Image (cartoon, rainbow over all chains, first blue to last red; front, side, top):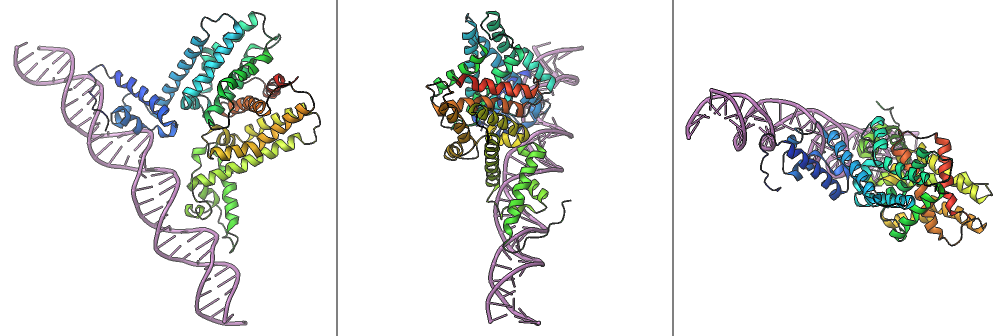
Length: 203
Length: 203
DNA sequence: TGTACATCAGTGAACGCGCGTTCACTGATGTAC
DNA sequence: TGTACATCAGTGAACGCGCGTTCACTGATGTAC
């Protein structure tokens, strides 16, 4: 039995919207499975009936897309925070990489939806994600490496970014999908992997 | 309407079993979605009623696990074939890497199930997969590099294998999940990525 | 200050659907005599 | 060679379930007069 909710005042309908988004995120974390997150489950966990979800989201896809969107912003924010105040550009990249992997490990089901499942968005929306979000932050970091003269010359910035991303995503997504593999000591292994991902790009 | 099936002779019941497995694989490829592959869909595509699936597989999980198992063998076989007859150990690794990425691109939904979804098997079964399948082939290749004195010294074989795998898996799984990203020219990019994944491990 | 009314956040009940699975069965095939 | 019978591959119908979504509604809240 969910706790009795007091209904929102007139004009405060948006409050429930936020609550629904928060509950959906929480459910994703708790169940660790996108499929377990149904409209009905979200409604019950929010303490509300299913139809009232539809007052705030046109359908399930829109709800999940918005949760996704929030996560992209969170990831972006995590990277920004991780590299803030670090002067050495290579250290900055390492910090970003570390933050990225940790984000995946701490929000596995979100990471799954964002990067491992079929896309919720269109190709255009994805170009947007690349252009403005965490990936752009990664490119900024690489640009700083280049500007400091620390990069192997001749490489294209975007291509370099995709290589680095792919490599770090590889570790992150394997950790998310197969946490029970006989992984070596994780902290050390992650650091090592970040080094290996960056090293070939450095002068 | 599926084509009328002639029922198997007595003792030939196993024939349908094979047919079901083949249909399930085909459905995975055609629909590109694990969720679209239901017992009922498999039955219909095989030209048979749902209950007869249960004569051959105890439940849906077992059916999917066996499809998975077949794919692991196929991948293993693809790697073996790719590196057969190549003497240069580094070239051998490149060939394996290429075969791996191609396998993912050609069987995206299988790749998804094998490496991107929650595991169907137990941790023990996975250790087995690592010990005997495609990953073992990768370790063999790396061992050959070491034996030829071409590897950076001091690295642990298994750890090295996990790094290389993670990096190549990163590219493969991104290609599988987000084929519509603005990828650079793919052939060149893949070769480049394999180089980058191997290079830091070479002397 | 009191009352009639419009607003609108949220409800209760139901829709049709496809799912995995179970059950009692049918009827062709091969075998024993 | 003929017939009764056991085998067993596959069927038809149904089960209960949870799903996304729709619909007509209720009733507390704020507003106009």
